[in-house]
Length: 109
Image 1: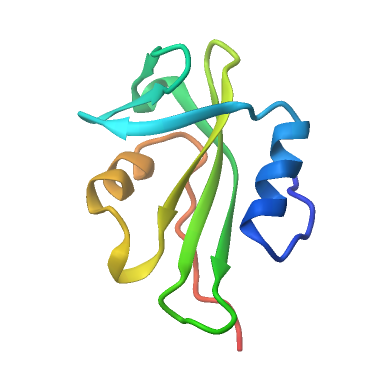
Image 2 (image 1 turned 60 degrees about the vertical axis):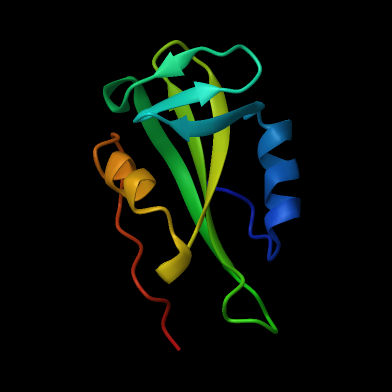
């Protein structure tokens, strides 16, 4: 899947919602939870379909990564993490064990 080439996090989230990524995932106690249904998912039940890195135009500290994720039962949703020093290390470790994970490389200047 290819996410449309948007420059903003909000527009990308809107695009993904239109494509069925409607679940809001949260990461607690080493599992993903669908906030609405309260279903939980372990890393082996998830696939990262795509991800996109965002950098703030005026503030280098305003960086985030959006992950489009699908579970083995068809639940599709998103989770957003900070990028760089503000990232959640436990979430990062969890995502590394999810199918489809690719380490983000620095963007070319």
